Amino acid sequence: MVMTESNESTRNGVDTATLFATLDAVRQAPEAARFQFRARNEWVNGTHNRSTIHDYFGVGEERTHERTWVFDADHPAVLVGRDNGPTPVEFVLHALAACLTAGLANIAAARGVTLTEVRSTVEGDIDLNGILGLDPGVRNGYEQITVRFTLKGDAPAEKLRELVEQSRARSAVYDIITNQVPVTITVDTQ
Amino acid sequence: MVMTESNESTRNGVDTATLFATLDAVRQAPEAARFQFRARNEWVNGTHNRSTIHDYFGVGEERTHERTWVFDADHPAVLVGRDNGPTPVEFVLHALAACLTAGLANIAAARGVTLTEVRSTVEGDIDLNGILGLDPGVRNGYEQITVRFTLKGDAPAEKLRELVEQSRARSAVYDIITNQVPVTITVDTQ
Image (tube, rainbow over all chains, first blue to last red; front, side):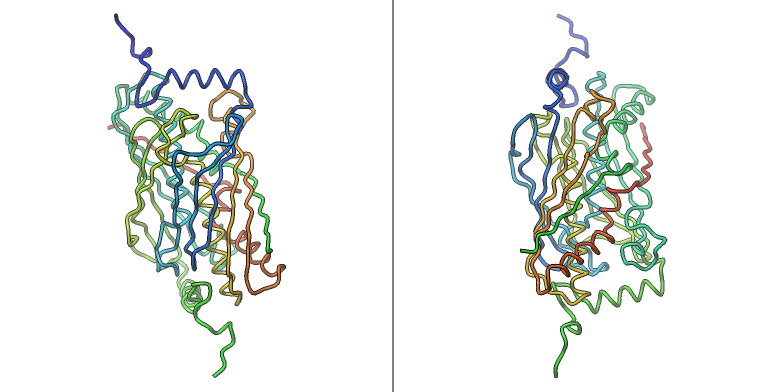
């Protein structure tokens, strides 16, 4: 029996049969794709605080991750913190790299490309005169972010580049960063 | 000797003397505020990948955090992953909560308010018909994010709310999410 590569069920660690079945299921029941993700944060001391990630809503019901993850964030000493964790803006860079890379593996699998290596470096340039309130002409967030991928797989360079382009075109975090998401903040002082 | 609260050097774990000295130093040398933060990501398998956060540039030189942090990201099984870490979009929620909370502690300290409790829950609503490519009218990222703070401290409710408002107005991650950051992606297929 000869199987073409595109019929193999798992490629790049992606179960493509399940991936396509999931796509078909959502096509039949689009409301299954409504998710709500959550983080719960607790202030520790100074700029040090801690988030817990565990529960979420998706495919019509409340769900939980298999584990509960806890992440500390802080500022380094040079920014008047104690370096108990990365800065919040560094987590944004991780999120962007992770989103583009996960999408890349899925898209490569769907297109029959076997990847052997994917690395990326994400750099975010920020002028802290913004958040320090010292220059009204400087924004608070990153001025620019640069992502550099190194990619190896069994496809020509042009096809590998197309995988990254498609991942960018379908990335949730890329969209969040490059476009605008409305954020509502409420405060309970009880 | 009687010290007023605003003369105490540390409040909320924030060394306000150092905070104000830092502000003065940057006022004198604005280029010290140019920072570059970085994350390095490596694909593991499927939607599972891992970022390392360690070095950054700031105050005119290359620097390193006191530790090297490693964070895994993945999709849960219901999104065809293996749940080896939070999803990339959940890290964005952590980053937002962490940024607003760190700013809040600094601002409260600068204004002489002692905080006793700061908690927040961040919820992000997302319709995965976007990233799944099933509905061109649905965006890839969050449709909306809601942050709910619970705040206690030695100030009237209105003043506590003003602290959150000022933290929002000076938050790097809030700016990144609610406004647009240009992202450049390069691919090396060597």
